[in-house]
Amino acid sequence: MKKFYLILCISIFCLISISISSSSYEDKGSQPIINKKLALQIGELILDNKYGNTMKKEKPLSIIDHDSAWFIHGNLPKNFLGGEGYIEIDKRNCKILRLGHSK
Image (tube, rainbow, N blue to C red; front, side, top):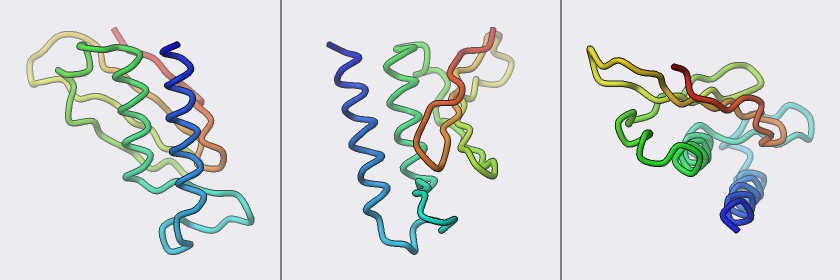
């Protein structure tokens, strides 16, 4: 049931990103590209759902704009041992390209 709600939320976010005015995203043909704020919200939702309390220590999340994808990752406190959660989302179709947690 959790997976259903997660997929539903992602779908809603993607549909919202399509309906955002053209000034909010770069136009490369007819393919929608989500904006930075929305990409960060989607990434945070998915990482929190997947890794739960582990992600609380890694906030605020960082986002990097790769040409065709957003890369969102956690930030550990200084001198803290451990890995960070990360997700890469395709700008064109909101597809999750990578999802994981480093060690």
